[in-house]
Length: 240
Image (cartoon, helix red, strand yellow):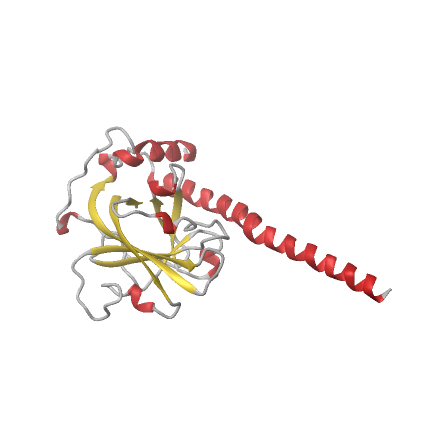
């Protein structure tokens, strides 16, 4: 009798565990994706009638430093950009929100480390995101290939970054957020984008860090780079 009761309890515990895993790996993604889609729609609504794809630029020129606008730092919880990573699929359109609190990362996808620079700034523009749950915004970070472009759209225009390399570090390596990543105290000369997430995919013993360097900027009025032109137009139409 006791063995039967213990067996039933173990089965019940197993079912509960499976339901918890399903909730973590599926339902949190469903919820977060819906919130992120809404944030993207609101971002585009705030842009108004600015052109998004009338004359996409195939090879945008590299801008001189005085031609690159840089947003002021935003309040915690404010979505100020949208990011496109073609390597992650032609539907990968995610909001970028100020802060890396649980409220931001669990709901709005990519969070901006407030102590780092903004898009286009000389130094380090660093973002964090989950890998397997709550939208899994950086689930495919390990698939990036040198030369891949990462596009960040703000109210000013499109910042094009080129992926350079990936690094695996321990969780206490906060020096990856320095203006020159891993080199605290060094004066930055490049405009760097840093993506951070947990590693391995189903664990958190390490951090995976992806670095990209800004290649160019083009204004919103000039339309998006050709690689994401159709995607931007589709998202903008859906938000209209």
